[in-house]
Amino acid sequence: MPRTIPLSEVLKMDAGESVVQTKGLLEKVFERKTGTNKNGEWSLQNAVLKDGGSEIKICLSGRAAGELEPLKGREIWLISNKSEKHGLTGLKVEDNNWTDKSGNAHSDKIIKVTASAVIARSDTAQAAANTESSPDDDDQVPGAEVKAPPATRPAARQTPAAVGSWKDTGSKILRLGELYAACTSAVVTHVAPKVLAKSGYAMGPDHLQAAAASLFIEFNRKFGLDMIPESPLPVPTKTAPTKPAPAPLVQSSICDECGEALTAENMCVNRNCPQCGPF
Image 1 (cartoon, rainbow, N blue to C red):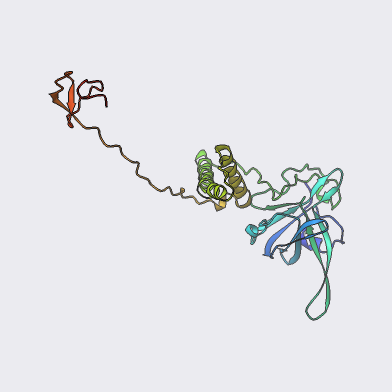
Image 2 (cartoon, one colour; image 1 turned 120 degrees about the vertical axis):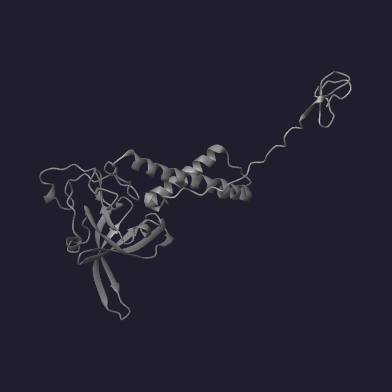
């Protein structure tokens, strides 16, 4: 499997070198900045990664909003992407030159993280689960022939080890079901009325289902099972309207015209009775 490069070694790499993969504690996350230039929209977000006594700043460029905030305080993996055409992409060491308030110049190293890299929680993703290993893998360095996991943003969750029983699996499925119910409720009670009020468009069943599925997928992708409460989604109880009971028949009262029974209102049960009907 590809060699994981410790942050202590990343700090010694030259600007422009690609990082195969590294990991560390996401200690700080700074505000995401956006704007537009001649090339279109851009975004940058800085964070600090720490591993033992080594610390390095990472700079996310052109990645989705809200990606780092849920990972703050957790150990994460940064994994580059490997393609035949471009080689290793997504993680690159760059020089960071800056001046403090006193006018003193400084220079340090940062890891530039672009869209093709994978950012994954270490407790939900096996960093090299999809790589091919060889006897000399431990000697590989940045730029060597490696097969990195396919790039996603953020990283797709890897299949965990088998659980102890179907009861454990069932409880997780039920929690996902509760999440889907909450997403569906949000679409029906909040999204659809707003769409109708603002545009006059009434969302049909297929559109409602697609909107609920989008919310479910996006929530689960960003936050995972940990953010779904174990308690069931509260459902407001509604008393179903009751129909008034039909008037009892008075069996002892008989219609003089047709011989059928009369109700308590003295009406014949025969709808075609010449005397009482039609009604």
